[in-house]
Structures are given as C-alpha cells and as structure tokens.
Image (cartoon, rainbow, N blue to C red; front, side, top):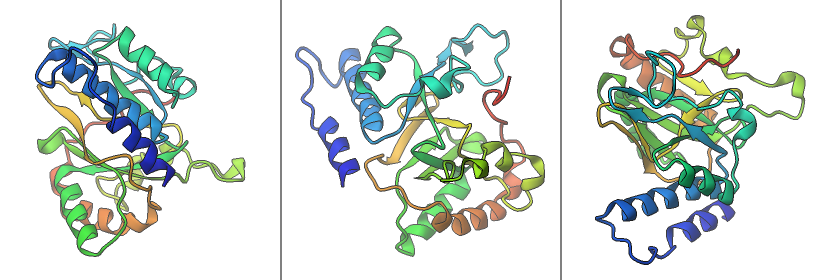
Length: 243
C-alpha cells in the first residue's frame, strides 16, 4: 500500500507554472515526474548515457550500446531513491537516461518482445499477480521487462545470487531468451530514449506490488521457448559488470 500511495502522490503533482503538455518544458516536467515516481516506488536510480546523433553521449569511440549503459562504473553505489538527488541529476543533464540497479529492491525478468506479450496475456488470463512491466524498443531487438521482488539479497550473504549466473551461454537451453537481472545488473527505467527513435515505456506502472519472480517464471520460459528461434540476434549485456 505504501508503494502505491507514494507513486500516486507524484502523479498528482500539478503542472509547474508556465508549462504546457505540448511544449518541451511540459514534456520535461512529465518525464521528471515519472522518474521521481520510480524512485518513490523504491527503484534505485543512477544516470545513464543517451543517444546523441548517430552514436552515444559517452566518450567511448564506437560505443556498442549507445544510450543503454550507466555513465559511471560506480553506478551500483551511486544508485539512489532520494528524490532530491534524482532531480539534481536530471536538471544537471536533462537528456540523460536513467538505469535502475537490480538486486536491491527488485529484480527484472527480461524477455524478447513477442515472448513477453504472449506471456503477459497468459498471466493475465490466469489471474496471476504480475506487477510493473516495461517495454524496451520494438522489433527483433525489443524486450519486455517484468519487475519482481528481488532474490539477490538473501539473509546469508554467502548465498547471494549474482546476475552473471543467469547470463552465461550454458543457461540459455534452460531459459532460452530470458535474462534475469538481479544483483550486479541493471535495466533502463522508463521513460528513456533509445537510438533510432526507440524508447523505454511503462505498460504497468511501478506503483504495483512486486510479485515473486518464481510465479512468473513458467509462463516466461514457455513463451521464450516458443520464440527461441527469433531471439538468435539479441544484444549482449550493455556494460561490463566487472572491470
């Protein structure tokens, strides 16, 4: 209930004086409110790069994932739910995308677009509690992101579950096309801009309760298996997890 009420508080904020939904200022205000709503819902945020021209705002020549990675290798420690800190970052760099660090408040199950929409329809028909869902891009490279409760911070720190365990090629036969973002990983949080006019947007907002990931896993893996042949060209992780 706290998650829902805090999110609703941000969405009820009145537009700032002199802005209009059809203007750049109005769009910037709406974007800020959505990002602050994600932080208010408990999703730790950190600054990310953004598309610039035909490339990326970062200084990496030939960046392989423009606009999809954090701006700092210290993103895990910088990630914050503090509204003032997020607003400061956004106003200092209005074009910046933001990532949310997983494995702290939430995990993310990340699947190809077609598999994601198929699984979503199945879960809704079965009355399963789904939680927040976002769409990242479209077409063969598009993904659907299912936000869940985290399994990355167990009581026994010796048993913590790094995201890399779910990203190695040998796991793909068991979970074809599925990425499980938990401790040590991140995803872009809506709203975000992608290259070629792509975007990351909410289908179901962050105010919703986070479900246990295991309640979604069967539907997601079944859908991924069905569409596995179409997933052959998906991109790898957006930023080195270790350096």
